[in-house]
Length: 190
Picture 1: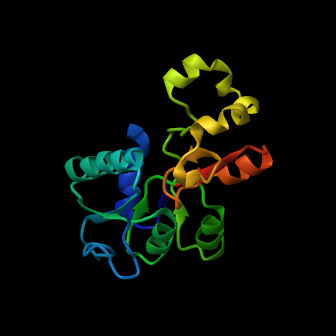
Picture 2: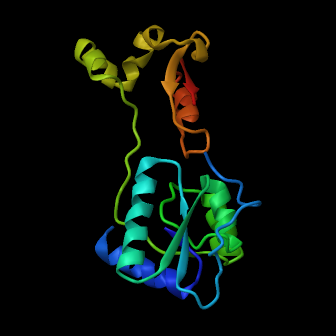
């Protein structure tokens, strides 16, 4: 979780940490409640995936119903969210999957963002095949056998190679490098 140094956000984040609990162009848009002096308001960045949206919904509920804050949310992609946070357009990013360049720039160098700590939930990234396929071809779950099945995963988008379907191009992923380094006959398709 990344936060700006603000009392409202600090109090809200403390509660969130104890309880365990597409995108906008932030250069042109901001919450009307961002940086509201003296008001008990918090503006949260909402990422585009369901888990992040759930985190924000829980935080919003707790901040509004338990701490009496007015909460506004703004949907924004991961990297622009760092810029928005640094500029005071949002007060917190509750979920971040690792952007070392942004962390270096804003936390270490500029010191305009403070790391608020981990949420306590560990995400898992992996490759998945449909159950019916894995039941018919149990060896597909070993990456060393993936090329054997590449032709069965070909699509028009994958250009004659097997398709490795990814989420948004803005998500943190190493799939292209993994495909290249493991010499897999697959193309990452977003």
